[in-house]
Length: 431
Ligand SMILES: Nc1ncnc2c1ncn2[C@@H]1O[C@H](COP(=O)(O)OP(=O)(O)OP(=O)(O)O)[C@@H](O)[C@H]1O
Ligand SMILES: [Mg+2]
Image (cartoon, rainbow, N blue to C red; front, side, top):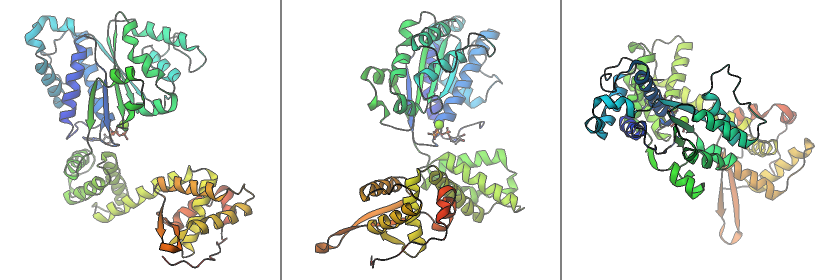
């Protein structure tokens, strides 16, 4: 994790304010963070949680007040500052006086759950319970097999076993809801009603802005009590992020400011994603190192961008179902044969020939067109309807990916039997 997070100071301050209110021991509110991929949602939440937990441990173990400990060496000053600001914002010191502060802050425990991995109600609830249980304890819940009401009551017991504030981060929570419905959120948003000692606060993270609309209205108003949006970074912000990260990772003479700006500009064009920007910089540095090049230049950055894009496409292609692969395969073979643009008719015909050769079920035209729609959504092909006036309309299809490389990737498993078999180009096309 980086030491500091440039251009997220405001978001950190806001989150800290909300969470400090929770620390005070009132019924805490839940928070939803939204933002596109690579906007720092996960890293900000994790860093802040760590800071809160560290603070809480200091409070608990060493009997320090929040304020006496302001120059703590336990965490970076910028985080300290954010917390201090949040505390003074609330005016807690004036309100209660220093001595009682320790008493009104409950110990904090933070539990981070990635809902892409923990994607059912059972898994999420047992995971929370087990995070509150020592590793070798016999009382840990099994990964499957218990009835839900037992999971529920044992979770309640664990949560309520000490007088603390438990912050549960549900990262990528939209995936959990789309996979398993909102029962688990219903349970968690109401759990405070059943607790007498502890308090639970939820921090949901999603990159789907409309995700709350899919929820039961009670869950929706509870989980979305506070909302925070992380906006994509612009090129200048990405440049600062890369600069700071590269200072941690490179010798200053190995990297030019221009190269950093170039990486930032490329990533800014692609939705302001910091992960993408860091990936481009990392892969280009690896390439330069492999060449024993003392300096990282634009050429490596361009190569790196190409490589990352090809890796992404190959990854998508590898996971396609067989019939969809075969439709893509047909379009790419047509492209290799000179048809930069082709028609649905030609794709269907080529596909049918290949499917017969492989003894696969031959899908009908409509099904093939549906699969082409899927490929279009994934950005692998592009189809467009062209009108010829009174001569009717036709759909023109074009592959968005390089044919040779992707065909090589597709030539394994059953499709390798098609190697060297060219499609027949029978139609006259002019578009
Ligand atoms: N302001 C920043 N300063 C330094 N590094 C950052 C900053 N924002 C993001 N990063 C880095 O960029 C990468 C992506 O960030 P993060 O994982 O937090 O994104 P995210 O919003 O959670 O994306 P996703 O929606 O895909 O999960 C991480 O390596 C993170 O450390
Ligand atoms: Mg994330």
